[in-house]
Length: 146
Image 1 (cartoon, helix red, strand yellow):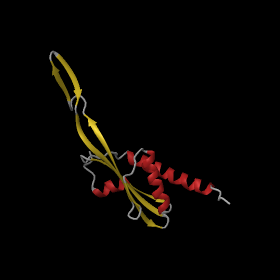
Image 2 (cartoon, one colour):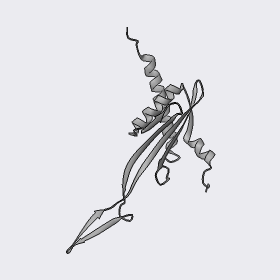
Image 3 (spheres, helix red, strand yellow):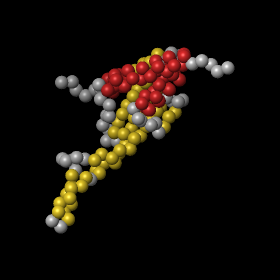
Image 4 (tube, helix red, strand yellow):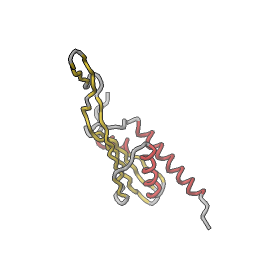
C-alpha cells in the first residue's frame, strides 16, 4: 500500500501543460470553471490566479447529527446544520513559453480535505484540453465583419 503523496507527486497530478497562448489557456480555464458551475470570486490574469469560494452548508445525516425534540408526548426529528463552510477551487495558469502554458487545478474544503481525487484530475484536464481546442476551432471559423 503506497504511503501519502509528496508535494511533488501531488503537483504532478494536479498540473498539466497545454499547447496554446496564455490567453487561450486562461480563457479555457475560466470556461472550465463555468462548465463545472463554479463562479470565480477572484481572478488576476497577470499572476494567473483564478479562485472561487463556494459556500455550503453540510447537513449531517444520521450518525453525524440528527437530533430529536421532545414536545409533550410527540418526538419531532429535525436536522441540525452542523457545518457552514467554503469549498475553494483554484487554478494557477502559468506561461512556460509563447506556446506552452501550465495549469494547476485544486479543490479544497475549509477543513483541508481535497475535493477532487487523483482520478478526477485527468478528467478535468482532458475537459480543459477539449475546451481550448474548441475555442481555437471556433476562433478560426469566425468571419470578420466588414
